[in-house]
Image 1: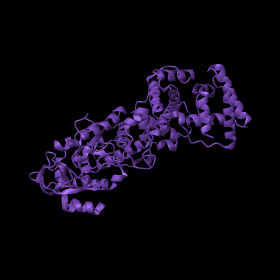
Image 2: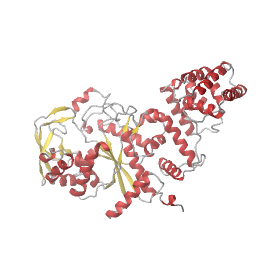
Image 3: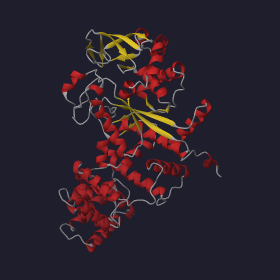
Image 4: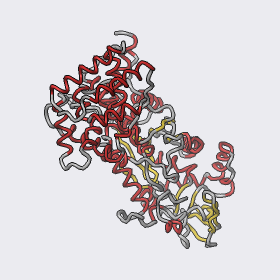
Length: 540
Protein backbone atom coordinates (compact mmCIF):
# COMPACT_ATOMS: atom_id res chain seq x y z
CA UNK A 1 0.00 0.00 0.00
CA UNK A 2 1.37 3.44 -0.90
CA UNK A 3 2.09 5.88 1.89
CA UNK A 4 -0.49 8.39 0.57
CA UNK A 5 -3.21 5.75 0.81
CA UNK A 6 -2.37 4.97 4.43
CA UNK A 7 -3.14 8.46 5.65
CA UNK A 8 -6.68 8.70 4.24
CA UNK A 9 -9.03 8.97 7.23
CA UNK A 10 -12.54 7.64 6.58
CA UNK A 11 -13.61 9.01 3.21
CA UNK A 12 -10.75 11.51 3.02
CA UNK A 13 -12.75 14.70 3.74
CA UNK A 14 -12.49 17.35 6.46
CA UNK A 15 -15.64 15.81 8.00
CA UNK A 16 -13.74 12.54 8.55
CA UNK A 17 -10.76 14.35 10.08
CA UNK A 18 -13.00 16.11 12.60
CA UNK A 19 -14.87 12.88 13.44
CA UNK A 20 -11.55 11.07 13.91
CA UNK A 21 -10.22 13.83 16.19
CA UNK A 22 -13.47 13.64 18.21
CA UNK A 23 -13.26 9.89 18.76
CA UNK A 24 -9.62 10.09 19.85
CA UNK A 25 -10.45 12.93 22.24
CA UNK A 26 -13.50 11.12 23.68
CA UNK A 27 -11.39 7.99 24.27
CA UNK A 28 -8.76 10.08 26.10
CA UNK A 29 -11.53 11.58 28.26
CA UNK A 30 -12.87 8.06 28.92
CA UNK A 31 -16.48 8.99 28.05
CA UNK A 32 -19.14 6.63 26.72
CA UNK A 33 -19.31 6.38 22.93
CA UNK A 34 -22.77 4.71 22.87
CA UNK A 35 -24.41 7.84 21.42
CA UNK A 36 -22.38 10.83 20.26
CA UNK A 37 -24.41 14.04 20.04
CA UNK A 38 -23.43 17.01 17.91
CA UNK A 39 -25.26 20.31 18.20
CA UNK A 40 -26.19 23.28 16.09
CA UNK A 41 -27.82 26.40 17.48
CA UNK A 42 -30.68 27.82 15.42
CA UNK A 43 -31.17 31.56 15.82
CA UNK A 44 -34.88 32.35 16.08
CA UNK A 45 -34.71 36.14 16.08
CA UNK A 46 -34.46 36.76 12.33
CA UNK A 47 -34.93 35.25 8.88
CA UNK A 48 -32.58 32.23 8.69
CA UNK A 49 -30.05 32.41 5.85
CA UNK A 50 -27.78 29.95 4.09
CA UNK A 51 -25.08 30.52 6.75
CA UNK A 52 -27.45 29.60 9.60
CA UNK A 53 -28.38 26.46 7.68
CA UNK A 54 -24.66 25.79 7.19
CA UNK A 55 -24.15 25.31 10.93
CA UNK A 56 -26.69 22.51 11.10
CA UNK A 57 -25.75 20.88 7.79
CA UNK A 58 -22.07 20.70 8.69
CA UNK A 59 -22.80 19.35 12.16
CA UNK A 60 -24.94 16.70 10.48
CA UNK A 61 -22.00 15.95 8.17
CA UNK A 62 -19.88 15.23 11.26
CA UNK A 63 -22.63 12.94 12.59
CA UNK A 64 -22.59 11.08 9.24
CA UNK A 65 -18.78 10.73 9.39
CA UNK A 66 -19.14 9.26 12.91
CA UNK A 67 -21.78 6.84 11.63
CA UNK A 68 -19.42 5.87 8.81
CA UNK A 69 -16.85 5.00 11.49
CA UNK A 70 -19.40 2.72 13.17
CA UNK A 71 -20.68 5.02 15.94
CA UNK A 72 -24.27 6.00 16.69
CA UNK A 73 -24.59 9.76 16.38
CA UNK A 74 -27.36 12.38 16.22
CA UNK A 75 -27.69 16.08 15.55
CA UNK A 76 -29.47 18.20 18.17
CA UNK A 77 -30.93 21.31 16.50
CA UNK A 78 -31.35 23.75 19.42
CA UNK A 79 -33.58 26.73 18.71
CA UNK A 80 -32.72 29.80 20.76
CA UNK A 81 -36.40 30.80 20.90
CA UNK A 82 -36.14 32.23 24.44
CA UNK A 83 -33.89 34.94 23.01
CA UNK A 84 -35.21 38.50 23.15
CA UNK A 85 -35.86 40.50 19.97
CA UNK A 86 -33.05 43.08 19.77
CA UNK A 87 -33.92 44.73 16.45
CA UNK A 88 -36.43 44.37 13.64
CA UNK A 89 -35.02 42.57 10.58
CA UNK A 90 -35.32 44.45 7.29
CA UNK A 91 -38.72 44.09 5.64
CA UNK A 92 -40.69 43.12 8.76
CA UNK A 93 -43.56 45.31 10.08
CA UNK A 94 -43.00 48.33 12.30
CA UNK A 95 -45.43 47.12 14.98
CA UNK A 96 -42.71 44.73 16.13
CA UNK A 97 -41.00 47.76 17.76
CA UNK A 98 -43.50 47.35 20.59
CA UNK A 99 -42.08 43.86 21.18
CA UNK A 100 -38.38 44.77 21.39
CA UNK A 101 -36.69 42.76 24.19
CA UNK A 102 -39.59 40.33 24.55
CA UNK A 103 -38.70 36.63 24.11
CA UNK A 104 -39.29 35.73 20.45
CA UNK A 105 -41.44 32.76 21.52
CA UNK A 106 -43.87 35.26 23.17
CA UNK A 107 -44.20 37.58 20.14
CA UNK A 108 -47.05 37.06 17.60
CA UNK A 109 -45.98 35.71 14.20
CA UNK A 110 -45.96 38.64 11.71
CA UNK A 111 -46.76 36.15 8.91
CA UNK A 112 -49.69 34.65 10.83
CA UNK A 113 -48.83 31.01 10.14
CA UNK A 114 -47.06 29.85 13.33
CA UNK A 115 -47.80 30.11 17.08
CA UNK A 116 -45.09 32.80 17.51
CA UNK A 117 -42.41 34.90 15.82
CA UNK A 118 -39.72 32.50 17.13
CA UNK A 119 -41.61 29.42 15.93
CA UNK A 120 -41.91 30.98 12.45
CA UNK A 121 -38.16 31.69 12.17
CA UNK A 122 -37.27 28.21 13.47
CA UNK A 123 -39.75 26.59 11.06
CA UNK A 124 -38.09 28.27 8.04
CA UNK A 125 -34.72 26.78 8.97
CA UNK A 126 -36.23 23.37 9.77
CA UNK A 127 -38.01 23.45 6.39
CA UNK A 128 -34.63 24.01 4.69
CA UNK A 129 -33.12 21.09 6.65
CA UNK A 130 -36.10 18.83 5.88
CA UNK A 131 -35.93 19.59 2.17
CA UNK A 132 -32.20 18.79 2.20
CA UNK A 133 -32.88 15.47 3.95
CA UNK A 134 -30.99 16.44 7.13
CA UNK A 135 -32.01 14.31 10.13
CA UNK A 136 -32.08 16.06 13.52
CA UNK A 137 -33.68 16.06 16.92
CA UNK A 138 -35.31 19.44 17.48
CA UNK A 139 -34.94 21.06 20.89
CA UNK A 140 -36.76 24.31 21.63
CA UNK A 141 -34.89 26.54 24.10
CA UNK A 142 -38.18 27.75 25.57
CA UNK A 143 -39.25 24.15 26.18
CA UNK A 144 -35.86 23.34 27.76
CA UNK A 145 -36.23 26.23 30.22
CA UNK A 146 -39.94 25.76 30.93
CA UNK A 147 -39.66 22.01 31.65
CA UNK A 148 -36.60 22.35 33.88
CA UNK A 149 -34.09 20.62 31.58
CA UNK A 150 -31.45 23.24 32.47
CA UNK A 151 -32.24 23.74 36.17
CA UNK A 152 -29.22 21.84 37.52
CA UNK A 153 -26.87 23.85 35.28
CA UNK A 154 -28.50 27.23 36.04
CA UNK A 155 -28.32 26.48 39.78
CA UNK A 156 -24.60 25.57 39.64
CA UNK A 157 -23.75 28.60 37.49
CA UNK A 158 -25.63 31.06 39.73
CA UNK A 159 -24.04 29.60 42.89
CA UNK A 160 -20.64 30.25 41.30
CA UNK A 161 -21.51 33.66 39.89
CA UNK A 162 -18.79 35.54 41.80
CA UNK A 163 -15.99 33.34 40.48
CA UNK A 164 -17.60 33.49 37.05
CA UNK A 165 -17.90 37.28 36.95
CA UNK A 166 -14.17 37.66 37.63
CA UNK A 167 -13.29 35.09 34.97
CA UNK A 168 -15.47 36.77 32.31
CA UNK A 169 -13.77 40.10 33.10
CA UNK A 170 -10.34 38.44 32.84
CA UNK A 171 -11.20 36.66 29.57
CA UNK A 172 -13.03 39.34 27.59
CA UNK A 173 -12.71 42.53 29.63
CA UNK A 174 -16.45 42.71 30.40
CA UNK A 175 -16.90 43.47 34.12
CA UNK A 176 -20.71 43.67 34.18
CA UNK A 177 -21.08 40.14 35.63
CA UNK A 178 -18.98 41.01 38.68
CA UNK A 179 -21.96 42.94 40.07
CA UNK A 180 -24.94 41.21 38.38
CA UNK A 181 -25.83 37.55 37.84
CA UNK A 182 -25.35 36.03 34.33
CA UNK A 183 -29.11 35.46 34.09
CA UNK A 184 -31.83 37.48 32.37
CA UNK A 185 -35.21 37.30 34.14
CA UNK A 186 -38.32 38.02 32.07
CA UNK A 187 -39.89 40.91 33.97
CA UNK A 188 -43.28 39.73 35.29
CA UNK A 189 -44.69 43.23 34.82
CA UNK A 190 -43.54 44.29 31.33
CA UNK A 191 -42.69 40.85 29.89
CA UNK A 192 -39.27 41.87 28.59
CA UNK A 193 -35.80 40.31 28.76
CA UNK A 194 -32.49 42.20 29.28
CA UNK A 195 -34.18 45.11 31.10
CA UNK A 196 -34.42 43.37 34.51
CA UNK A 197 -31.15 43.18 36.47
CA UNK A 198 -30.62 39.87 38.33
CA UNK A 199 -29.32 41.01 41.74
CA UNK A 200 -29.39 37.99 44.05
CA UNK A 201 -29.84 34.23 43.89
CA UNK A 202 -31.71 32.25 46.54
CA UNK A 203 -30.42 28.66 46.05
CA UNK A 204 -32.88 27.06 48.49
CA UNK A 205 -35.88 28.50 46.67
CA UNK A 206 -34.26 28.38 43.18
CA UNK A 207 -35.29 32.00 42.68
CA UNK A 208 -33.55 35.08 41.31
CA UNK A 209 -34.39 38.53 42.77
CA UNK A 210 -34.42 41.30 40.18
CA UNK A 211 -35.23 44.96 39.50
CA UNK A 212 -36.49 46.11 36.09
CA UNK A 213 -34.06 49.01 35.58
CA UNK A 214 -33.73 49.16 31.78
CA UNK A 215 -30.84 48.38 29.49
CA UNK A 216 -28.99 49.35 26.33
CA UNK A 217 -30.14 47.05 23.49
CA UNK A 218 -28.23 47.57 20.27
CA UNK A 219 -27.96 51.32 19.77
CA UNK A 220 -30.93 52.36 21.87
CA UNK A 221 -31.75 52.60 25.55
CA UNK A 222 -34.81 50.60 26.61
CA UNK A 223 -36.45 51.94 29.77
CA UNK A 224 -37.26 49.53 32.61
CA UNK A 225 -40.71 49.56 34.21
CA UNK A 226 -39.33 49.70 37.79
CA UNK A 227 -40.90 46.39 38.89
CA UNK A 228 -39.09 44.38 41.55
CA UNK A 229 -39.76 40.67 41.50
CA UNK A 230 -38.43 37.12 41.65
CA UNK A 231 -37.87 34.68 38.78
CA UNK A 232 -38.24 30.95 39.37
CA UNK A 233 -35.47 29.12 37.48
CA UNK A 234 -37.48 25.86 37.53
CA UNK A 235 -40.33 27.46 35.55
CA UNK A 236 -38.33 29.19 32.84
CA UNK A 237 -38.97 32.72 34.12
CA UNK A 238 -35.75 33.83 32.43
CA UNK A 239 -32.68 32.62 30.59
CA UNK A 240 -28.93 32.42 31.05
CA UNK A 241 -26.64 35.02 29.48
CA UNK A 242 -24.87 33.90 26.29
CA UNK A 243 -21.52 33.90 28.09
CA UNK A 244 -22.67 30.85 30.06
CA UNK A 245 -25.69 29.40 28.24
CA UNK A 246 -23.81 27.24 25.71
CA UNK A 247 -22.03 25.49 28.58
CA UNK A 248 -25.36 24.69 30.29
CA UNK A 249 -26.72 23.22 27.04
CA UNK A 250 -23.58 21.21 26.39
CA UNK A 251 -23.76 19.51 29.77
CA UNK A 252 -27.56 19.10 29.86
CA UNK A 253 -27.68 17.41 26.45
CA UNK A 254 -24.22 15.77 26.60
CA UNK A 255 -22.97 17.55 23.45
CA UNK A 256 -19.58 16.44 22.08
CA UNK A 257 -19.22 18.73 19.06
CA UNK A 258 -20.36 22.21 18.06
CA UNK A 259 -18.82 24.45 15.41
CA UNK A 260 -18.81 28.24 15.80
CA UNK A 261 -18.33 31.37 13.72
CA UNK A 262 -15.48 33.71 14.54
CA UNK A 263 -18.00 36.41 15.58
CA UNK A 264 -18.67 34.52 18.85
CA UNK A 265 -15.11 33.36 19.63
CA UNK A 266 -15.00 35.17 22.98
CA UNK A 267 -18.32 33.68 24.12
CA UNK A 268 -17.11 30.19 23.21
CA UNK A 269 -13.86 30.65 25.17
CA UNK A 270 -15.79 31.65 28.31
CA UNK A 271 -18.34 28.84 27.83
CA UNK A 272 -15.57 26.26 27.42
CA UNK A 273 -14.13 27.34 30.78
CA UNK A 274 -17.58 27.31 32.44
CA UNK A 275 -18.25 23.82 31.06
CA UNK A 276 -14.89 22.43 32.23
CA UNK A 277 -14.39 24.24 35.54
CA UNK A 278 -17.87 25.10 36.86
CA UNK A 279 -20.01 22.28 35.47
CA UNK A 280 -17.30 19.62 35.43
CA UNK A 281 -18.20 18.51 31.90
CA UNK A 282 -15.42 18.54 29.27
CA UNK A 283 -16.45 21.10 26.65
CA UNK A 284 -17.28 19.86 23.13
CA UNK A 285 -14.75 19.72 20.33
CA UNK A 286 -15.06 22.83 18.15
CA UNK A 287 -14.31 23.80 14.59
CA UNK A 288 -14.12 27.50 13.79
CA UNK A 289 -15.57 28.48 10.43
CA UNK A 290 -15.49 31.74 8.51
CA UNK A 291 -18.66 33.75 7.98
CA UNK A 292 -20.64 33.80 4.75
CA UNK A 293 -20.41 37.17 3.02
CA UNK A 294 -22.54 38.49 0.20
CA UNK A 295 -20.94 39.35 -3.15
CA UNK A 296 -20.16 42.90 -2.01
CA UNK A 297 -18.21 41.52 0.97
CA UNK A 298 -20.84 42.35 3.62
CA UNK A 299 -21.68 39.78 6.27
CA UNK A 300 -24.97 38.04 5.42
CA UNK A 301 -27.23 39.00 8.29
CA UNK A 302 -30.88 38.94 9.23
CA UNK A 303 -31.01 42.59 10.20
CA UNK A 304 -29.10 43.90 7.16
CA UNK A 305 -31.71 42.43 4.83
CA UNK A 306 -29.14 40.87 2.45
CA UNK A 307 -30.41 37.46 3.42
CA UNK A 308 -30.05 34.52 1.05
CA UNK A 309 -32.47 31.96 2.47
CA UNK A 310 -32.53 28.19 1.85
CA UNK A 311 -36.00 28.68 0.30
CA UNK A 312 -34.65 31.24 -2.20
CA UNK A 313 -31.83 28.87 -3.17
CA UNK A 314 -34.17 25.87 -3.54
CA UNK A 315 -36.32 27.76 -6.04
CA UNK A 316 -33.39 27.46 -8.50
CA UNK A 317 -31.09 24.75 -7.17
CA UNK A 318 -31.33 21.21 -5.82
CA UNK A 319 -30.74 20.37 -2.14
CA UNK A 320 -27.57 18.60 -3.35
CA UNK A 321 -26.18 21.91 -4.67
CA UNK A 322 -26.61 23.48 -1.19
CA UNK A 323 -24.95 20.48 0.48
CA UNK A 324 -22.05 20.73 -1.99
CA UNK A 325 -21.58 24.41 -1.08
CA UNK A 326 -21.53 23.53 2.63
CA UNK A 327 -19.59 20.23 2.61
CA UNK A 328 -16.92 21.20 0.07
CA UNK A 329 -14.75 22.91 2.66
CA UNK A 330 -15.02 24.73 5.97
CA UNK A 331 -11.99 27.08 5.93
CA UNK A 332 -11.81 30.45 4.20
CA UNK A 333 -14.31 33.29 3.85
CA UNK A 334 -17.08 32.47 1.38
CA UNK A 335 -18.68 35.10 -0.84
CA UNK A 336 -21.99 33.51 -1.68
CA UNK A 337 -24.96 34.69 -3.71
CA UNK A 338 -27.88 33.31 -5.67
CA UNK A 339 -25.75 33.65 -8.83
CA UNK A 340 -23.63 30.71 -7.56
CA UNK A 341 -26.50 28.29 -8.20
CA UNK A 342 -25.68 27.45 -11.87
CA UNK A 343 -22.00 26.72 -11.13
CA UNK A 344 -22.81 24.53 -8.11
CA UNK A 345 -25.47 22.62 -10.03
CA UNK A 346 -22.90 21.79 -12.73
CA UNK A 347 -20.18 21.09 -10.17
CA UNK A 348 -22.39 18.48 -8.49
CA UNK A 349 -22.79 16.77 -11.90
CA UNK A 350 -18.99 16.87 -12.26
CA UNK A 351 -18.61 15.20 -8.83
CA UNK A 352 -21.11 12.55 -9.91
CA UNK A 353 -19.27 11.89 -13.19
CA UNK A 354 -15.98 11.51 -11.29
CA UNK A 355 -17.65 9.22 -8.75
CA UNK A 356 -18.93 6.89 -11.46
CA UNK A 357 -15.68 7.03 -13.44
CA UNK A 358 -17.21 8.88 -16.43
CA UNK A 359 -14.42 11.47 -16.05
CA UNK A 360 -10.85 10.46 -15.23
CA UNK A 361 -8.91 12.12 -12.39
CA UNK A 362 -5.23 11.14 -11.95
CA UNK A 363 -4.75 12.93 -8.62
CA UNK A 364 -5.76 10.12 -6.25
CA UNK A 365 -6.09 12.34 -3.15
CA UNK A 366 -8.41 14.76 -5.00
CA UNK A 367 -10.49 11.87 -6.38
CA UNK A 368 -10.84 10.25 -2.92
CA UNK A 369 -11.95 13.55 -1.39
CA UNK A 370 -14.48 14.31 -4.16
CA UNK A 371 -15.93 10.78 -3.94
CA UNK A 372 -16.19 11.21 -0.15
CA UNK A 373 -17.99 14.57 -0.40
CA UNK A 374 -20.34 13.04 -3.02
CA UNK A 375 -21.21 10.20 -0.62
CA UNK A 376 -21.82 12.60 2.28
CA UNK A 377 -24.05 14.80 0.06
CA UNK A 378 -26.03 11.60 -0.59
CA UNK A 379 -26.15 10.74 3.18
CA UNK A 380 -23.86 7.69 2.65
CA UNK A 381 -26.45 6.16 0.27
CA UNK A 382 -25.23 7.20 -3.19
CA UNK A 383 -27.37 6.29 -6.21
CA UNK A 384 -26.57 3.07 -8.09
CA UNK A 385 -26.01 4.96 -11.35
CA UNK A 386 -25.53 8.57 -12.45
CA UNK A 387 -28.50 10.64 -13.57
CA UNK A 388 -28.51 12.24 -17.05
CA UNK A 389 -26.75 15.60 -17.08
CA UNK A 390 -27.23 18.84 -18.99
CA UNK A 391 -25.50 22.14 -18.29
CA UNK A 392 -27.70 24.30 -16.08
CA UNK A 393 -27.24 27.46 -18.16
CA UNK A 394 -28.08 25.50 -21.32
CA UNK A 395 -31.37 24.37 -19.72
CA UNK A 396 -32.10 27.96 -18.61
CA UNK A 397 -31.41 29.29 -22.11
CA UNK A 398 -33.63 26.65 -23.69
CA UNK A 399 -36.43 27.49 -21.22
CA UNK A 400 -36.04 31.20 -22.03
CA UNK A 401 -36.90 30.45 -25.69
CA UNK A 402 -40.42 29.50 -24.51
CA UNK A 403 -41.10 32.06 -21.74
CA UNK A 404 -44.89 31.80 -21.67
CA UNK A 405 -45.43 28.34 -23.11
CA UNK A 406 -47.67 26.01 -21.11
CA UNK A 407 -45.54 23.00 -22.04
CA UNK A 408 -42.09 24.60 -21.92
CA UNK A 409 -40.67 21.82 -19.69
CA UNK A 410 -41.70 19.24 -22.31
CA UNK A 411 -40.23 21.37 -25.09
CA UNK A 412 -36.89 21.70 -23.27
CA UNK A 413 -36.88 17.95 -22.64
CA UNK A 414 -37.51 17.35 -26.37
CA UNK A 415 -34.44 19.50 -27.14
CA UNK A 416 -32.32 17.35 -24.80
CA UNK A 417 -33.47 14.21 -26.60
CA UNK A 418 -32.67 15.84 -29.94
CA UNK A 419 -29.16 16.73 -28.78
CA UNK A 420 -28.61 13.17 -27.59
CA UNK A 421 -28.14 14.32 -23.97
CA UNK A 422 -30.92 12.13 -22.56
CA UNK A 423 -32.96 9.15 -23.68
CA UNK A 424 -35.52 8.61 -20.93
CA UNK A 425 -37.63 11.06 -18.97
CA UNK A 426 -36.58 10.87 -15.30
CA UNK A 427 -37.69 12.81 -12.21
CA UNK A 428 -34.19 14.23 -11.78
CA UNK A 429 -33.89 15.69 -15.30
CA UNK A 430 -37.44 17.14 -15.18
CA UNK A 431 -36.66 18.69 -11.76
CA UNK A 432 -33.51 20.29 -13.22
CA UNK A 433 -35.50 21.65 -16.16
CA UNK A 434 -38.08 23.17 -13.77
CA UNK A 435 -35.38 24.78 -11.59
CA UNK A 436 -33.49 26.17 -14.60
CA UNK A 437 -36.79 27.48 -16.04
CA UNK A 438 -37.38 29.36 -12.75
CA UNK A 439 -33.90 30.84 -13.18
CA UNK A 440 -34.70 31.83 -16.77
CA UNK A 441 -37.96 33.49 -15.64
CA UNK A 442 -36.32 35.53 -12.87
CA UNK A 443 -32.85 36.29 -14.27
CA UNK A 444 -33.30 36.88 -17.97
CA UNK A 445 -30.54 34.88 -19.63
CA UNK A 446 -30.68 36.86 -22.90
CA UNK A 447 -28.60 39.65 -21.30
CA UNK A 448 -26.02 37.36 -19.73
CA UNK A 449 -22.32 38.06 -20.25
CA UNK A 450 -19.51 36.01 -18.71
CA UNK A 451 -15.90 36.89 -17.93
CA UNK A 452 -14.33 36.17 -21.32
CA UNK A 453 -11.37 38.19 -22.66
CA UNK A 454 -10.92 38.03 -26.42
CA UNK A 455 -7.57 38.43 -28.19
CA UNK A 456 -7.49 40.54 -31.38
CA UNK A 457 -7.46 37.37 -33.51
CA UNK A 458 -10.42 35.91 -31.59
CA UNK A 459 -12.34 39.18 -32.04
CA UNK A 460 -11.74 38.96 -35.81
CA UNK A 461 -13.00 35.34 -35.85
CA UNK A 462 -16.15 36.37 -33.94
CA UNK A 463 -16.76 39.25 -36.40
CA UNK A 464 -16.36 36.80 -39.29
CA UNK A 465 -18.81 34.41 -37.63
CA UNK A 466 -21.39 37.21 -37.30
CA UNK A 467 -21.11 37.71 -41.09
CA UNK A 468 -21.47 33.95 -41.69
CA UNK A 469 -24.62 33.83 -39.54
CA UNK A 470 -26.43 36.35 -41.76
CA UNK A 471 -26.92 33.62 -44.37
CA UNK A 472 -28.72 31.48 -41.77
CA UNK A 473 -31.37 34.02 -40.75
CA UNK A 474 -34.97 32.85 -41.24
CA UNK A 475 -34.01 29.44 -42.63
CA UNK A 476 -35.69 26.29 -41.28
CA UNK A 477 -34.01 24.50 -38.39
CA UNK A 478 -33.25 21.07 -39.87
CA UNK A 479 -30.31 18.60 -39.73
CA UNK A 480 -28.95 19.71 -43.13
CA UNK A 481 -28.82 23.42 -42.21
CA UNK A 482 -27.40 22.63 -38.76
CA UNK A 483 -24.62 20.53 -40.37
CA UNK A 484 -23.92 23.32 -42.84
CA UNK A 485 -23.59 25.92 -40.05
CA UNK A 486 -21.35 23.56 -38.06
CA UNK A 487 -18.92 23.29 -40.97
CA UNK A 488 -18.97 27.09 -41.47
CA UNK A 489 -17.80 27.52 -37.86
CA UNK A 490 -14.90 25.13 -38.62
CA UNK A 491 -14.04 27.19 -41.73
CA UNK A 492 -14.15 30.44 -39.73
CA UNK A 493 -11.64 29.04 -37.24
CA UNK A 494 -9.25 27.79 -39.95
CA UNK A 495 -9.51 31.04 -41.95
CA UNK A 496 -8.27 32.84 -38.83
CA UNK A 497 -5.40 30.43 -38.21
CA UNK A 498 -7.15 28.94 -35.16
CA UNK A 499 -7.52 25.34 -34.07
CA UNK A 500 -11.33 24.75 -34.43
CA UNK A 501 -11.38 23.41 -30.85
CA UNK A 502 -10.18 26.84 -29.63
CA UNK A 503 -13.11 28.62 -31.31
CA UNK A 504 -15.69 26.05 -30.12
CA UNK A 505 -14.42 26.31 -26.51
CA UNK A 506 -14.52 30.11 -26.78
CA UNK A 507 -18.15 30.00 -27.98
CA UNK A 508 -19.18 27.65 -25.15
CA UNK A 509 -17.59 30.01 -22.63
CA UNK A 510 -19.42 32.99 -24.10
CA UNK A 511 -22.81 31.28 -24.19
CA UNK A 512 -22.72 28.74 -21.32
CA UNK A 513 -19.73 29.74 -19.14
CA UNK A 514 -18.42 26.23 -19.78
CA UNK A 515 -15.71 24.54 -21.85
CA UNK A 516 -18.18 22.15 -23.48
CA UNK A 517 -21.73 22.07 -24.75
CA UNK A 518 -24.10 20.78 -27.47
CA UNK A 519 -23.26 20.72 -31.19
CA UNK A 520 -22.88 24.37 -32.18
CA UNK A 521 -24.80 24.12 -35.49
CA UNK A 522 -27.98 22.76 -33.88
CA UNK A 523 -27.56 24.94 -30.80
CA UNK A 524 -27.21 28.26 -32.67
CA UNK A 525 -30.18 27.56 -34.96
CA UNK A 526 -32.30 26.59 -31.94
CA UNK A 527 -31.37 29.76 -30.05
CA UNK A 528 -32.09 31.86 -33.14
CA UNK A 529 -29.56 33.73 -35.27
CA UNK A 530 -30.64 37.14 -33.96
CA UNK A 531 -30.09 36.16 -30.33
CA UNK A 532 -26.76 34.47 -31.13
CA UNK A 533 -25.57 37.57 -32.99
CA UNK A 534 -26.60 39.90 -30.12
CA UNK A 535 -24.73 37.71 -27.65
CA UNK A 536 -21.56 37.63 -29.79
CA UNK A 537 -21.64 41.43 -30.19
CA UNK A 538 -21.71 41.85 -26.39
CA UNK A 539 -18.20 40.38 -26.22
CA UNK A 540 -16.83 42.79 -28.82
